[in-house]
Amino acid sequence: MNTKPNKIVFWILRIVPAVILLQTLFFKFSAAPESVYIFSTLGIEPWGRIGSGIVELIAAVLILIPALTGVGALIALGVISGAIFSHLTVLGIEVQGDGGQLFIYALIVFISCVLLVFFEKDRLLSLLKNRFPDGLKS
Image (cartoon, rainbow, N blue to C red; front, side, top):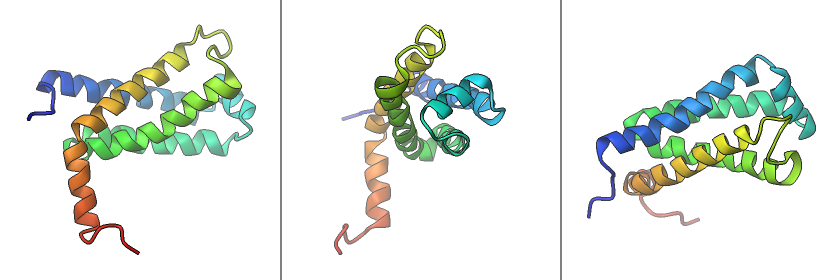
């Protein structure tokens, strides 16, 4: 059974989260006031801002490399899950009058990456099997 969408849909699923992740890097790395506010509110400024930016950069690049799309999507899911959790528990849906735009972007990245992981599950499982040929026994 083919578990991949057509090439156009698959590329859209890859480009959209990568562009969103890359677009936010400017704000994180330039210490834009909105970014500083968010990470200060979370109590992890500046290291949380810079660290999450680095991880998002890595995830975005990996998502765009066909053989590593699933790995990048898994990394992005980890980072974006933290962002969504922060919005729901500390920041709120709307941050500094943005109308919930950052939260919506986070949801778009999350949904896109869930789909990418689903479509790339065979490749991800193959990577795990190659990395741990005898299983995860201790």
